[in-house]
Amino acid sequence: MESASSAASDDSDIETPARSPTPPKSDPRVFGGFRVKRWADIREDLRRQQPKYLLARDLPSRLQDYINNRPAESRGHPQMRRLFEHEIYINSADTEHDAPEIKVENSVDDEPCPPWEFYYTNEMWHTDDIPPPTREGLVGCDCVGDCSTNKNCACRKHQLEKAGEYASGDFAYHPDGRVKVDARGVPIWECNDMCRCDGHCVNRVVQRGRKCPVKIVKTLEKGWGVFYCGPKKLPEGSFVGIYSGELVTFDVGEQRGPTYDQSGRTYMLDLDFYHIRQKYENDHRLSIDAYHAGNNHSCAPNCCLQPVYINDGELKKPLMAFFTLKDLLPEEELTFSYFGELDRIDSGTEKQEDPKAVFAPCRCGAKMCIGMWNDSRIICVGTHAWLGVLFN
Image 1 (cartoon, rainbow, N blue to C red):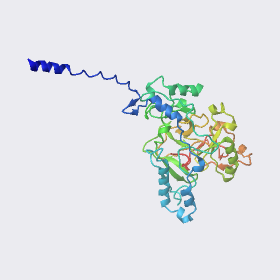
Image 2 (cartoon, rainbow, N blue to C red):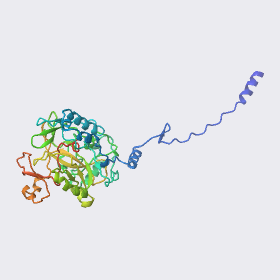
Image 3 (tube, rainbow, N blue to C red):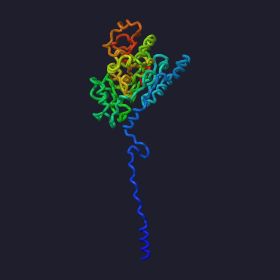
Image 4 (spheres, rainbow, N blue to C red):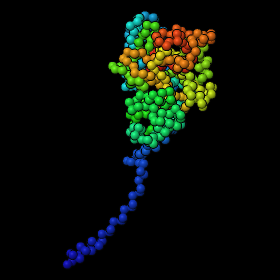
């Protein structure tokens, strides 16, 4: 009895543990001590970041200067072709690492490659007076996967609103990446870095880079040109590359033009599409200076230029993308008209009244050839294989 009483007494001495405090509510944006980012947070971070800003004064030229200072026999060595091809590959590895390699061919003479006068790039290089890219004005969609399944896609609405009466009623591209016929010549607003859709979205074409194989070939009468070298035909509307180079003000372009005219080579493309002219006067518009480019003009072109916007919200700074106007066969040269549409051109002899303009016999071979071309100011620029500045 005594032991039982003692045990009961011991049990009564045991204190009930205090109730544990209610744990604080956890922050749903923190997990394991790390901040959890929502897509809205990522988009806001991107808006605050400075986009990539390339300055023309930083264009690399050390290799080109070294080679151009070598004796003629060194510059004409057959191995220069391999070096030229490798330089193209290195310069585009960061932005188009999966693009088909570009080869150089010459069965006309002993010149191993095009002259070393350019830097191969598929990006825009700004002069100091051109402001950096901006994300202001960009629309980011919240689509999951492919935007084509979302009729309420913000980028779809943005395309229709910006293109206005010229809009095709939907995205500008077919599911296979070809530009639609009714969207030809109309500015395109692709999905951008602030969009939630994936990289296979129907509205991401130019930003995925060049997919068609091309080569640089020496021609008999027109110098170096660019040829399609795929195993089968390239369908109409296919993206083939961009017209890149130095972005300058319209006034600077006007100043450089006469100097270029004297040398007989001018590739100054004015960014003066209808939707840009509606908003900006001449003194606010821009030009692309791709002086180190060749002659791939044709009076019956198989490629055209189209303004495309991706990660720069500034209306007057589109990327200029090349798309095919018809199906191209293997080994067919890529060409476009420097003048735009032929019905906008007067006869070549009439244009010779300008003593400062540079005229040259046209060797395109088209049935509707106008006989000569003037490169003092380009309306619709072409693809010739100085293509460091052009194709990538």
